[in-house]
Length: 300
Image (cartoon, rainbow, N blue to C red):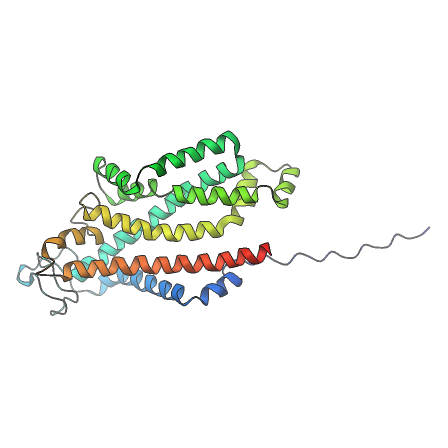
């Protein structure tokens, strides 16, 4: 009897590179603007959350004798406001509020948009059409107008402003995810998962979703910058975070009548908003370039 020749051993598939240890991360590290943005947002975050511990005043301390002190006066690094409150202390605490609102709104809107996009993209048909028409209906309203209407009828607080911003920010994420999932649902690995009898939930969230995380991460990063700007906008108009809780937006609101006599009241929070939004946009652009190049290499 002739012996059947043994099959050659099958070489294991190379491990899939994750972002943090793969080419995408190396490409991100070579992007100077992205690194500048990362350093800026880290410094700004540390200043906001650790800075108040090193200041001699808190954000509510009033010293009427030091009203409108310019920056660099005594212990007032950034000067004082019309009530003699330290601008630096208020800026850092306001930064905590604005950054937390921005990141929390990003998380909520990304989760909602991802769920809607994955379900619409994978199921398609009538279900997908209905979900995407809901997205279109939300997009038909100007985001700022919808935001102001909701803020006008709901008691403003940090939690409610976060929810309002999230409710008006998830549609772009849903559109991006829906398009990406559509491009993945007929790939070989999805067909293999169906043949194995895996459930739709498993295929959508365990097989397809990890493969579309790149665009989601980029969209989420840019959503943070948008949420910070939206919070500042509605707080500046008086519908957002209410005093005495400071935010960068309501600091600008209180500074508008003193632009000529005490311009630092507007310049300091304005610079903080600009730095935060610019830094996050730099990070988002760097992530997009790194992940797009990684996707092109896989496709090639």
